[in-house]
Amino acid sequence: MSVYDTIVIGAGLTGLTAACRLAQAGQKVLLTALGEGALLLAPGCIDVLGFQPADSQQPVKDPLAQLDSFLSDNPDHPYRLLGKETLAAGLTAFQELVNRHGLNFQGDPHHNWHLPTTIGAVHPTCLAPASMAGGDLQKAAKVLIVGFRELRDFYPTLIADNLNSQSLGVQASALQLDAPPPVAGRVNITPIQLAHAFEDPLFRRRLVQAVAPHSKGVDKIGFPAVLGLAEHAGVLADLQKGLGKPVFEINTLPPSVPGRRLFEALRDAFLKAGGRLIIGGKILAGRIENGRVVEIRLETASRAKPLRAENIILATGGIFGGGLQTDASGRVWEPIFGLPLHAEDNRHRWFTRSFFASTGQPVANYGVMVNARFNPVDEAGQPVAENLFAAGAVLAHSEWTRGRTGDGLAVTTAYAIAEQLTRSAQ
Ligand SMILES: Cc1cc2nc3c(=O)[nH]c(=O)nc-3n(C[C@H](O)[C@H](O)[C@H](O)COP(=O)(O)OP(=O)(O)OC[C@H]3O[C@@H](n4cnc5c(N)ncnc54)[C@H](O)[C@@H]3O)c2cc1C
Image (cartoon, rainbow, N blue to C red):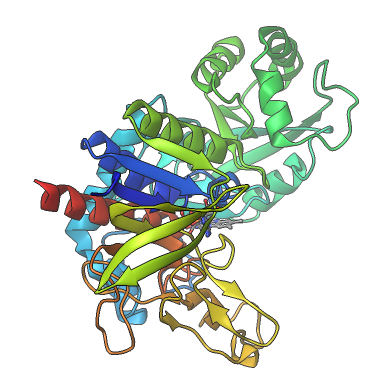
């Protein structure tokens, strides 16, 4: 008898989404992860399809409408296993999930926001926190971009100049400030540190006094995405009230404050639904017998502890996340089950000569091959284990940098597997 209905390995966007849905459906779920995943590095929005074709300069406006064209260029991409209906349902379900747990994600699968990035480029994304969606560049507006000398890697003049040079209909100006005390004068502070400072009402009052004289004649004001963590909604409302204008957030370089808010909302939703979470819980190996995973082994201080479940979801990410391992000899392997991979064991074939090649880098497509149920399969297409499922960045052909599909794939493959497991348990 298994202790858990499902064990999810990996607490990135994929693992958290799957674990939440299953726990909320009444399953007994263990989520175990070595670390916190790419969410804390990525912008904290849900990119579904941003550029099609991948080398197009024009950001996609309607991701679902462009899906067929994307799949014709990328026939092996796992979006093919989902189809438009599941993709849309997964995105809507995700939006409802996070919005029930304190966030305010805006958007729909037939629309991309075009948001300013930290270098003033355009970031097409499907679901975004309201605070970021407020910076949508598709509406003409006069915007003031505010930065802080103490914050590293956020340059309002660079952002404004780049936005103005792209004929977007946005007229941007820049304001670089010394942050109010207690941040004033500190060097190279991180977005997370500044986000904590924004939760102090006195800090915000002083900031409003410094920004207000520069905001006359502008329609809205953009800040780095540091407007609070747990108290984000209150911080945003307070700043808008104080400045008398809409305020929006522009993503920063990592660590990502919106990514942390999303991580915490999903984690809390999972725990509230009765899930058990182990962060720092590395799975060392898994045993497959007669076409089923019978056991996985969790690293502990004293021994490798066996864990059992009816189903296992592998959401361990790609090379970044630890779901795939590589070495200098060119070997690529999946470390828990030793699954068959789409990969080249010749490291000279991992990369193309041009970093920005329109075909992408082959290594970014390496991963676990799956069937329509998301069971890992061997070269002959035969499932390796009927109760093992793989989702998100660990999947083969899931290269995300060119089309901007990584978050959408994470959320929707997690949704598809969770739906399948919930239905089969009924
Ligand atoms: C810096 C960065 C920026 C990105 N920007 C974008 C973007 O702008 N747009 C976009 O679409 N996508 C972007 N992505 C990709 C996107 O974030 C990911 O594709 C998506 O979040 C999928 O995450 P995942 O949950 O599948 O994997 P990950 O987030 O990598 O999570 C993997 C999880 O598995 C755990 N794990 C691994 N091995 C083990 C083990 N043996 N035992 C236990 N746990 C284990 C890890 O600790 C982690 O918790 C970015 C990724 C990175 C790294």
